[in-house]
Image (tube, rainbow over all chains, first blue to last red; front, top):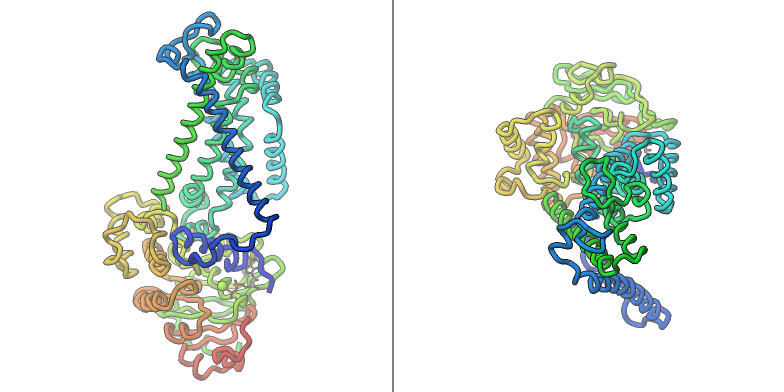
Length: 314
Length: 265
Ligand SMILES: Nc1ncnc2c1ncn2[C@@H]1O[C@H](COP(=O)(O)OP(=O)(O)O)[C@@H](O)[C@H]1O
Ligand SMILES: [Mg+2]
């Protein structure tokens, strides 16, 4: 008898059940999980392991070096005035408050647009459409988008949102451009997270008299949530640090935004301009330090949120 | 049809569900061939047969879970209290509440014990906290779990042992107040002690509900059921009281199977 995926669940679901048991620390003991055999490693094996180890260490080292370097030069700049005042003399003096607000605002607008769209698309692709063609086309489109350099998004946003739709340099134009940029990430990660939800959750839900929609919102999405949050966090990280896509679309105004039609300058753009035009290197490092700290904070918050979420649900 | 003359003998009053001349196709593949079978009220009916013979498929016809698989086609009649459940306009959600299902693997949601049991009532529109609490309690009692779990309703369902998880799945089902309970090899993932618990529970349930169990385990069918149906390659070979099927079956193939002589795939 050939075993296809739909067959009574003894294959696919077996595995999932196993994983569930693993999570509870039951079932599979440590007998199998003893790791690689230690004794008698060949020279080739040992050097391969050494290389892997070196690769891992250097990855962490590079990250650590960048963070330390930026903070080393930037932290001395961080005074309350620097964080809470508007810049003067093009940024040579004063603080960077409008760029902090601009960064947060443009990212928020982008995410507010991208999350419902991306999650909705992923739900549609995984739970609703049965047309292979539609799925393939949308997936192909998303993949292509993911490979496009962000400057192209900037150019597109400029031509389409800023000029053609007459939105001007604004939070909205910048947010829409960022949304287009992070959409593929959100779609893909949400799709993966939804597909990882055991089929049995859906079956049980339907068998208890739930509608398809209730099944998606109450049985599937909560289980997929940690994966979805991961995708959103990756997207936020990318959007917060993005320069090329926003410099053409959100503008570089140093005034505080008053509506989503206001132009703003993000921290990364500010940093770029300060450094590029040679306005003030110390201020540029100060801005970079705030940006790095913000990204670190977002990542820690993400871990914290996820752990809490997982702890509450399982 | 002569092979199971019993079909003519049964009393229509005690029939909860009835399957008549049911064929089922998965695309081109015919998985059920002319099945005719009664399910008696407040009795346990076991469906046995080698794997791949269509037991799960038949079970999933009874609450129309096969509807969720693209390309399935069912012909013939299946009735619940005399009403055809495949008739156009049937409320499938209401049907699934009346005919509930326990699956092969314990599959609680990754939620608390309370939320697992409240899931069914909630998706069916119940919001009242007090009534939800009451239903959770009676359902746990019905599944013999209340004393064990009453102090940890907020605990994670997945932290329970597999046996308790399966009992919890029964409780979750009871919360929607079903009339028929379908169990698809409910013990195949469980240890012998938990298996006995589930069998006792089934016995208990059969005082109120109509119970149908698919099982691979011959002893289980012999021990725990009132009626037994034996299937082979999509066909019903024989149906009768469990005592008769296991001690004096009409069909040679039934005899070969229950005595372990038929090669089980
Ligand atoms: N979703 C499906 N699509 C196509 N064929 C299926 C599907 N589910 C089961 N089958 C086939 O139908 C037959 C009966 O399967 P099943 O009812 O699961 O058997 P059992 O529960 O007795 O092991 C098998 O030959 C199986 O391969
Ligand atoms: Mg089966």
